[in-house]
Image 1 (tube, rainbow, N blue to C red):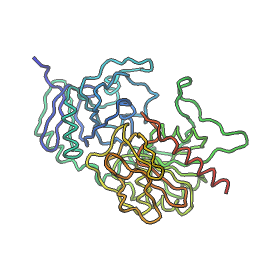
Image 2 (cartoon, rainbow, N blue to C red; image 1 turned 135 degrees about the vertical axis):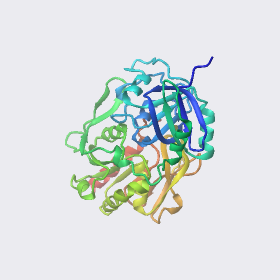
Image 3 (cartoon, rainbow, N blue to C red; image 1 turned 180 degrees about the vertical axis):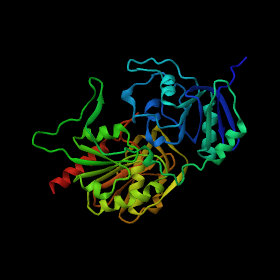
Image 4 (cartoon, one colour; image 1 turned 45 degrees about the vertical axis):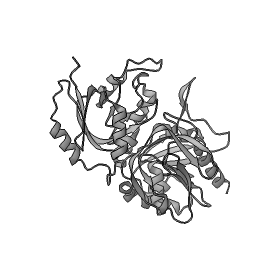
Length: 387
């Protein structure tokens, strides 16, 4: 006799998936997405861009490397829960300090295993990212009608500003560099004697730690400010470059306060570099528009073409909104496009050191094809310093 289901996933259209629950108990309402990465489930769970989302992993072996504090991209998990094909296994990795199930229970996140994730992924692709409720009850008692009704009543991410919820509460300095096999995380490298580090202000819309490490690895002196920081607060740090981070939610909603600030900075001719939500914020500040995607892009194997060089990069992605390339104004060039669907993945302002990409060049969990963008940002600051 099969084990009684201890978890269920109720979709707003009335479809219900049953499985075995793990991690925390209770229920949570969120948007359901799928992620095609083969590794990095801990980085994905702690990526602030996944706020108010439940992640279906298409790769079946989830939990096999355990978890370690070194791989957290934020202090706590941000994704609302996960759906996997097979129940997480015991970890088999020398870096593991805990197993995934215990980690999720301790961090208050719900998981469900034993699910036909191929069928679930097809459903997401066909109908778009649905509103769902994930419930875990060890006794297997579920009020299905109530769960479906709650999923239908949820308003979703459109019009929702989540950046303020995941941003830092106050400013701070970041000086930790990238992880290495020999040393783990090390201090950011010092610049050559007599050469001052570039002063970078990073706007935290939900910044991943590895983005900040990547900035620091170029020798930058990074000051992180909350999402709601004003242009005056940014300029008070006398930055040589401004970075706009990744983050969750509807960019148009976050843009209500972020766009005027960015427009003021654009008038100062500072080097500006944006990633993910930061890319969308920059596009809005330049006069473009953003749109909600059907099911978004989530994974570490997305091909992106650099239009200007013809090079194809394999990239890490996590976004449910996109910049509408048809609305880019004169003087702003589209630089990158997705080879999956042709959607916009990058832009730059002509004759100015201002650029951004939709994907994640910080490579957490990977790949590392696009790290050159951090070096490009550093070069832009060096040219500005040289006059």
